[in-house]
Length: 499
Figure 1 (spheres, rainbow, N blue to C red):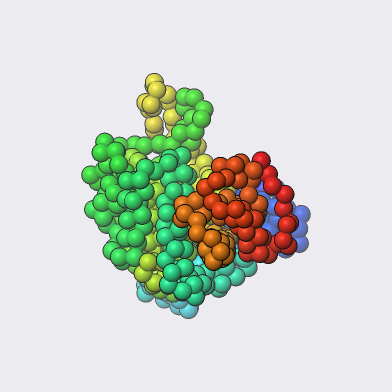
Figure 2: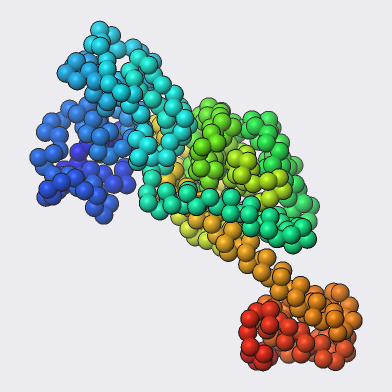
């Protein structure tokens, strides 16, 4: 059960890094194979030395690319050891990657090099990771292809499920579905989507928007199609538009430490502490650069999830971060050019319905970082917070769960929310038309009765009948129920009146 690879390096060098979700452990197996919560490694394959460099080479080959550990460990290595390995294998891809990263993380150059050969080696294996555009280091024949830069980078591991989700083209299917509705139905469906997206984005923050707030946030969502590049000034403008309280509006990215609280009292109530304010400008600069330059070949939902979740983990404002993160999700989808102007995929509606899963995804990244903060309660609303970690904790993060969640919510937004609402609108129209052909009923009264009947599965409650008795012509109740049953595909008389 001895750790090897990255986990060995983390423990051996006492690195302030998040423990791996699947550490490599020596186990009684005959080949390297993933197990529950671990990568099982046969003893004869495991490194037979305590040299961290050997374990990093093992990790890079068998475990993938863990930039957080590499960025902390490589500067501690003796460059002589790197050169020794390089001279023995000057064409070796993994040692060339480590040498290239050593130079980038230390700002120094290795000297007295042998002639380096071999094909260009990617830092992230495209067969294992979703990758970004290549930036080549000709000196080492290495290409950095992460989602971001070597100053801020998210990683997304591929899986059969994620590959299938990316190939499903949810945005293309959304465009086709909404485009086939016809003008009137399209406008109503999109009107519902903008309003419901606004209400549920606020609901996730435990708020009910006033009419002014709702109108302002709808205007914010509509800006997602403008294609403006993200900048500090633009995000401040958006934050100001999302908040009504003038005391909560920002002038710039935060210069104070903030934190998130749960229901517990005192220091135990602090559930997440974002990066120290001194780090925020650089981290946000890198995140905005990623969002602004996301290539067209990158799956739009991957770009959206990295931008949105990355933003909320940095938490660059004292308030309004959650709503802005969901705006950034929309903005990335719109910037991809796959959704025509005016179209929206109501992902916050799906997120609200799966709120426990949404919080669990956030906590997968935020909870481990809490351990690197010393939090001392002073009095109500005041804490002494001391960061005892390394800035790489916030620079390099695993966005796999966030991207998978983003794809599930995009699929739900199309196949459940948009389709169900469109079907509901079609049924509403069918029932209203059937009544209108036989009776003259006041518009508001008819709308209330039809909505109530459809919500109750084709049955009007006794309370509704009593409420409108004498206000609508005789026979309207039965006609509404019959038309609703037909629209719902139920046999006539298929329900009993409820109170």
